[in-house]
Amino acid sequence: MDHESVLNEFRAADALLEGHFVLSSGKHSDRYLQCARVMMDAERAARLLGALASKVREEIEGPIDLVVSPAMGGVIVGYELARQLGVPAIFMERVEGEFALRRGFEIEDGAKILMVEDIVTTGLSSRECIGAIQDHGGNVVGGACLIDRSNGKADIGVPLVPLIRLEVPVYDPDELPESLKSIPAVKPGSRGLKS
Image 1 (cartoon, rainbow, N blue to C red):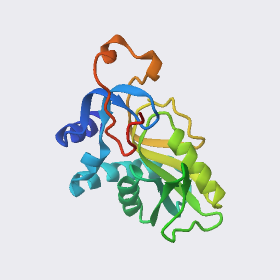
Image 2 (cartoon, one colour; image 1 turned 135 degrees about the vertical axis):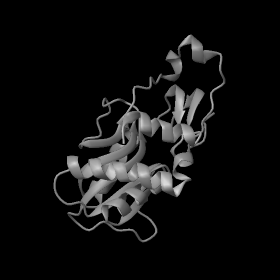
Image 3 (cartoon, rainbow, N blue to C red; image 1 turned 120 degrees about the vertical axis):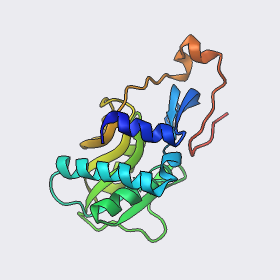
Image 4 (cartoon, rainbow, N blue to C red; image 1 turned 90 degrees about the vertical axis):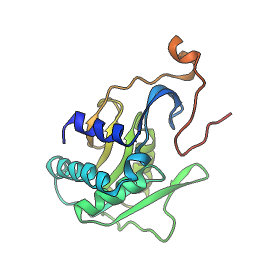
């Protein structure tokens, strides 16, 4: 699946938004990719994650025992990628601001883990999730995501396999371009806008 085909899947799902958005990292952008809308269609999800599974098999050496995703955005993406790879999937949830395993999920000591996100922008959530996986004894062999918004600049500490990379500028709140200053910011993701 090539770059334009992936973007067309997002467009068909009304999941490529333009405006003024506050990302989960706290940074601002004029474009937002809403993976939850893309994942609403099981056939679309299977196409996209099937293509990502092929890339993971090519780029991550050795076996993968388990897929672990940060909630919320990574849950469906992680589940479908794990299904495509033929391994189990679990997710981490934030408890008092820190990623933790709940719901009886466990990571076997030394298990080879693929950390899976929907979108990587700065890599902060990925690094936090990877740290929590390692704290539970997991060996993170790599990461995967649908979209790398950093266009390869985000360092998550392990190899990252994106379905596609995009160059989508992000801005600190105090360094907004004039084009965004006049547009009210919205927070479409799973973490609410902080006041």
